[in-house]
Amino acid sequence: MGWLLGGCDFDEMSNIPKELRESLALEHIARPIEIAEELKSRDGSVKYLYKLFDGNVIEGVYMPHDYGNTLCVSTQVGCRMGCEFCASGIGGLVRNLTPGEILGQFVAVNRHLGGSMSDRKLSNIVLMGSGEPLDNFDNVVKFIKLVSDPNGLNVGRRSISLSTCGIVENIRRLADLGLDVTLSLSLHATLDEYRRKLMPIANKYSVTETVEAARYYFKKTGRRVIFEYSMVKGVNMSFSDARRLSELTKGMAAHVNLIMLNKVEGKKVEGCTALEAERFCEKLVSLGVSATIRRSMGADIAGACGQLRRKRLDL
Ligand code: SAH
View (cartoon, rainbow, N blue to C red):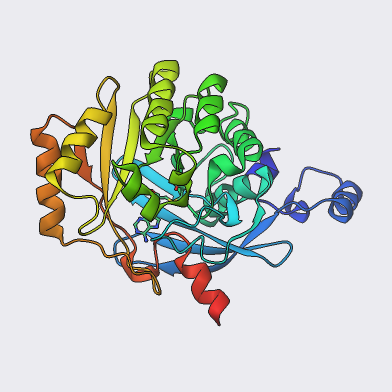
């Protein structure tokens, strides 16, 4: 297990008899995914394009921070959520990733950075790459259990953030499992009418129901919930939005993470200026909301969800 979680191939497992290594290699794949391409940003972040055994490609981002190094992992090839501003959903869902393929991203990058199972070079994980984690529930839960196993990679559950567009039943299921990961909810709007314009999932669940599920998650786990809010010019940045956001997030430990929209080719949604973002953030703070603007990384390396994969598919 140490060899596998360290990202080694069978022929590197030097304390295992040669015949056993050879027969293992015939029947199993030691490394279900491989790094196919690496793009380094000036800001220190790195975008990885991985190749899966069936030829599909997925991507991920490594982000160094003062508090530790974070890896953003994908949970599906493509995505069927179809959010208006996101590149990952453009071609729809291709398939779910297996627990091994999600774990494989962590293992591959950790090894690439010179780490092993016991000497990790990555401390935090965000499930914010391509795909909707709660649309691949069982495999994602299995991944979380595997990566946090104290006898294995031992990544603290509190160092893992799961970001969802808000599949309400599954937020509740996750809460009931008591995994203790941080829940990030992509809210992006405070009114159903506007949320529907940005996210098809809003046709299925109302803002009220969605936030209620987040509150349930907080009550069950005691974990502060992060609300992701991509600022869209003329759609979700009014004073009334700020007021509604402060009302919605009352009664639970919450933080609003404001996101500057990354422009995706072919998408009409328009982001805002840094100044407008700061004003909106100040409004929220003046209403007593804990809010910050997310530091954007990797703009020069197609850092946002699905952008690099799309570029490669176009070739
Ligand atoms: N499916 C999950 C996780 C993947 S996306 C989810 O919806 O939360 C991670 C975050 O990036 C989400 O908040 C998503 O809405 C946001 N996002 C997607 N495309 C973006 C873009 N072009 N610019 C800014 N944020 C984007």
